[in-house]
Image (tube, rainbow over all chains, first blue to last red; front, side):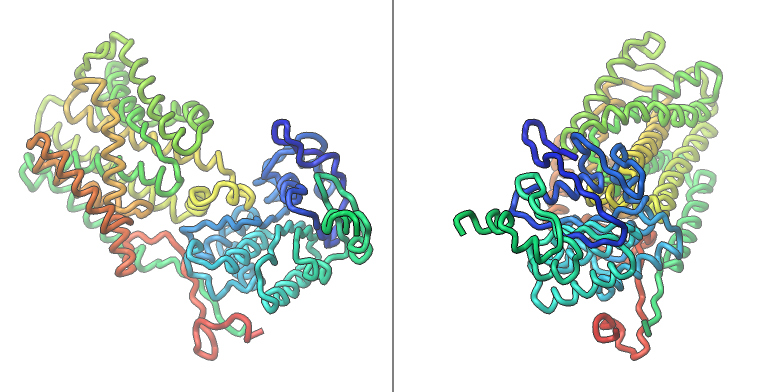
Length: 231
Length: 343
């Protein structure tokens, strides 16, 4: 698919096919179009050209809310909490709408999502009062509460301490083992490599490498966009 | 997990709150039969103020739609009374029919208004209100801009006043209960999510536009009902400029912000406060506005969350709770820290 804002092209003929259950990491320099790529997959932004298929269905024309209901969950790089609601209510919104659950079932799903993202101790706090780290975890909790089949993570490990990062990696590994397909944008490459089966490098709106993580990281193209040429 | 987790929605508080409200409702309903009518007639204004404030709060405080154009629906509700009254309905029936019709009219208007966001939405709603006023005054049958009277009304003043009082009370109670029931439902959760972040709400499966539209229509109907009460109380509309006047929006904003936005109780407090200020100072000319201004300044400085917001923050008191509480009962009895060590 392609994506542009007016005359400004962001993604150019990006084509990616992800098998169910795979965990894909996306790396690339700032401005490569990584976040836009996620937005186009989850429907926050419409595509300019091309199409998005999910589970064999063409979802290109569907809005984000429909795609969420059919199983695409997404976290935002800059957290977007429902500030005046409690952490639990944030997750409950995801379970009740994206998850399509009602009453007790929705509440259980919300609690489950809080448990998985280690947010249970904050359940009754106002989301607006949380620290940045907790907000990032809340993003994860909310996405999980929608019972996603495909989880799109946008720089969820950025800014974490090493210990926090290790526990996050464990959490995401568990999610992958439970059968959720994952697309994860991250600058913290060690975190990424610990989980993903496949690594894609985006630069200037095109895919420049796609393959096994170690090989992608060693490739000349990837090194040159990250480190500059002449190495 | 070795802990037992419960979700509480303060059912007791909600039950006490509702029971108290019901008692108050009964007391208010029989008041015109007991108290002197000169007293209860004044309360009609209080009731429609409560209705207006609650509706504005529903829009702004729970759905994040700052409108300064709700007078559009107040005006349409008032003028709707004439239309249906002329076709043989009683004034009270006309008010109810007009409110429903205004709800229908609000649907296409919402498509227009929702093209705008934030401050543009606010101004847009105002423009819509002005446009509707200009359309209404084109009709000679509606007084051509000079206002007009209701033709068929209850002639006996005591009966008329009692009926008007009951209608105003009924509308206010209906508006308040609608807010409470809506906000306790999953719809309320969707609304508050949208208010706090539309993009996130959308990507969590919430139908943003549909949900906002429903609230907009409810807000329109509530304001129309209040408008019809205003019209019925004075057996007509003195001037379309007044009933379509932006000052209604100013008072709604005043009541909601002073009372406490985003709470069910706040707008009622704000309406009470405004009602008394209006009652005692509205004849004092400029000083009336000065006093309103001073109250607004004091409230913004010392109670930025409004009167009820302050009460709620200080004593955690809520008569009509809509939130959820998670209660974690840990087996080892250290109630809060269950996270990492337990696993």
